Length: 255
Image 1 (cartoon, rainbow, N blue to C red):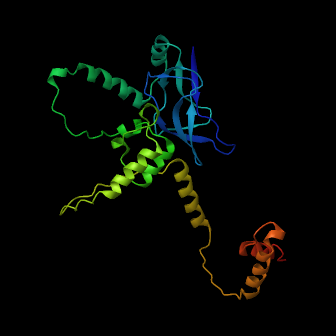
Image 2 (cartoon, rainbow, N blue to C red):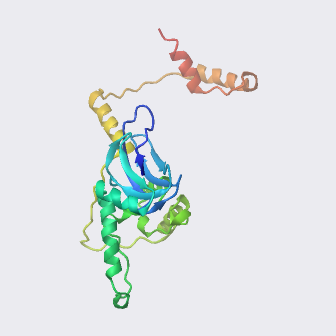
Image 3 (cartoon, rainbow, N blue to C red):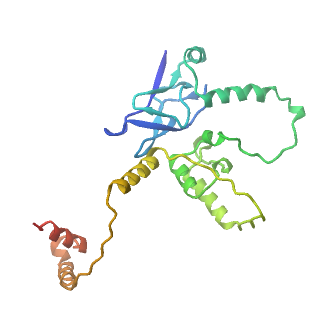
């Protein structure tokens, strides 16, 4: 018997969600109520907890979008049940890559290990880094390479404090001089989830609305005196009156 992991419905108007990061790899043991996957809708990022304990079978990849209620993974009660699931339902590409990498690593003789070299993260490796949504957002804003940040959270998970330390180190280090004729590598990052929705709606507003800027002057002397008088009565009124309050009061009475 296996338990389904589904895309939860986050709000009445939200239909789809994008898989941002699986917190465990294919075949890992997951305990009940542990965060198993992070998803993002057009409004918010949210953690999805494991409904039961079991062995994880990933059915959809990071970066893919699915409607609310869609099954994106399964939790098997045993290794035998997991093997049966893997035969019956296809695993996501990220899960297949992880499984293929394990035998290859096991076949490498320890005696023939090459001298230690600087680790250069492979393409796609970043998606498997365990990091909280808040820390990931902060890292994106400050261009911090999360594959080079050591996590201090539960299970080595990167938390906000780890990113803040990395930002401080980055800002303190002097910027290396640019090499003459150095080519800059550009990376195109698709707008998805909340950012994609914001960009789409801003563009729509720009396309359908008339662009107009108007400026004018008005004598605010009387309004300033009125506000000063009302501010003096703050203790009696129980609140501090602002210019916005006065303007809203006046505009609401325009015929």
